[in-house]
Length: 391
Ligand SMILES: [Ca+2]
Ligand SMILES: [Ca+2]
Image 1: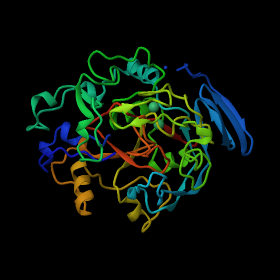
Image 2: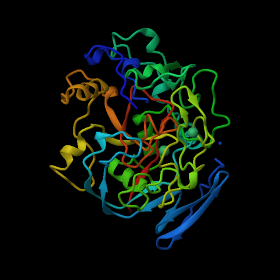
Image 3: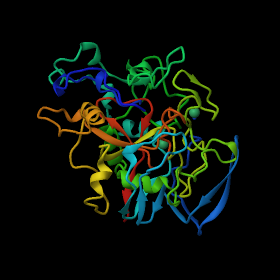
């Protein structure tokens, strides 16, 4: 989705939550006890749900304690092609070879039930639940210093999402929005404990991961896992966007952003694991919620990476902010963060698209797709999953 830049000054001290908004940008309680499954070799496996039967090309997989083992390998990261809707996504190119060591990754997105357990045990308070520090943002209006998050707020009438870059036409800062009440005051997650947690930022996600004895994935790890053992395919399941005419991921159907037909069965987030897994047996690597990674985001990162490739890349050394990204998109240059830049405005990679990605407007429910999350602006369509090193 297009980047949002509402107006503000280019002075980081003046940035507040609204103008730094990120680009719009039930568990059947899964068993937590130790599991160990082994799938031998590459096989066609039929997966059936309420929508129909899909055939998934499964590869050899080891599962343990809700995590899948991804063997170390070199693979082709990125995408240089029109994914089918006539649009190009230059931040995904050039395609390049990248080497990643073996690791384990969560089978599902982190759920509200799992996040609640973390909060109950630690007393952790997420960013969205705390007021902003006025000394850090002295020029921000008081009403934007109160706890809250950025929430999808579709217009009542259809609009052309391409008309302007102003994504505030379908996003709003919502008082009280946080993981416990993703749509703000009056909402709750009582019937959504098996949905992915949302309205968390990268620091919240890192805190959870540390508590769980894990960490956030790098972009290179995440994309390798999302590709499900397939090579050079556009989607996590292959090149056909809708095999047998069935949706393979929770995304947005209808006319974005006003009319969501929910043809896939879900208007908002879905219970994790509601759609078929990829070849590694990982669920929701496409859609449902964006998944925050540990790398800083830069749209031209791959162009610099190919000049100095390295195994297990961690992303760019320097962070950029949404203002600087906007500058880059307009002028092709991107100054380093200036003195006084709040780390809360740094952009981190997020992957996989969300329930708001639409074929025509944001075809980013693909393994190569790249987007970003900003600590200052947790949203109700971004969450995360964790990884851990091979031991
Ligand atoms: Ca949907
Ligand atoms: Ca996802």
